[in-house]
Amino acid sequence: MPESETEDLDYYPSGWSEEIHDEYYIEWILDDDQTIFVRLDGTMGDGQYSVTPITGVNADGEEFVTKPMSGLSRTDAFDVAATLIYAMNGVAGRLNGETEFTGDISDES
Image (cartoon, rainbow, N blue to C red; front, top):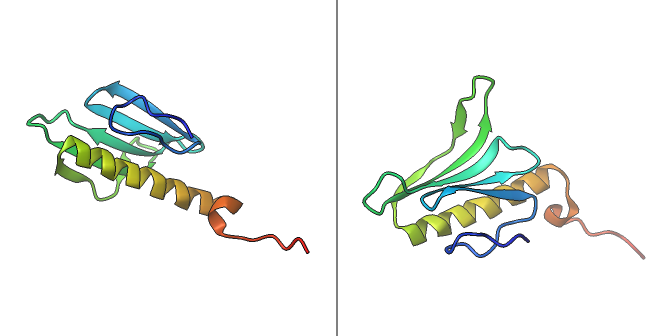
């Protein structure tokens, strides 16, 4: 599991990349499909952050945004981002049939 370069997140799942634009704008991107990512944005000022899960980008470059959360403190924003990253990672793994996420147990008797 890669160690985050941020002070507020320890680790993120393997198969994801962390892109730090600056200390207030960070994205975690699924390596297998870079149109799936989580964006943390604190550039609006007043110490408020938003976290936005992006689950796709269409041919026109428009992002499919699913329920962004805003008005968060920095700590809460990183907690929400971590939850979304791990949830999206688990769903992607399950949809790809990765045994780690499907709960499949092999019959080795």
